[in-house]
Image (cartoon, rainbow, N blue to C red; front, side, top):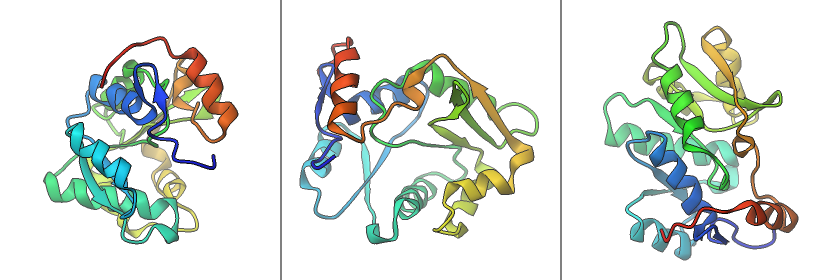
Amino acid sequence: MGRAKTLLPFGGTTVIGATVRALRQGGADAVIVVTRSDDDALIRWASEHEVSRVENPAPHLGMLSTVQAGVAEALRLARQPNLLISPADLPLLQPASVAMVLAALHRDNVGLALPTWRGRRGHPLAIAHRWVGEVAHLDSQVGLRQLLTLHADGLVSLPTDDAGVVRDVDTPEDYAQLAALATVEDPS
């Protein structure tokens, strides 16, 4: 993207603000944002918006290290949490999609749930508490896909009409397209 994308304006809030709003409205009890130690603006934003924050001590190790830092913090805060894992740049994500994956964890034999849009896997990924601890032991070269493979029999993919489960902000063009679609005004 060439610049910090999470704090770009989006529909009366920011890219991360819209994502966090969807997570909260969809049923997430708490939100943890994982930051780099030098991301002062995002650290400040998390504090101002009552979002828990943890630093990734090894961002050079890749995306899984970010997820692992967040999971470790979630385990520190709660004894047996079910987790949602989501990138911070899904500003079109709808609360109904979040609620759908959380509800799936209450079905028999479901330990992992994720939304799909037109056959593409999206976010958030819901992980039942019984498998949360395994995230710490995943291979950094494989990432969360390893958990999906290990527990394929406990994974449910949930089709949705919500393109927000896959539409993230990776380029200035992505941002311009998504910002043009933003219609919700929210001052948070």
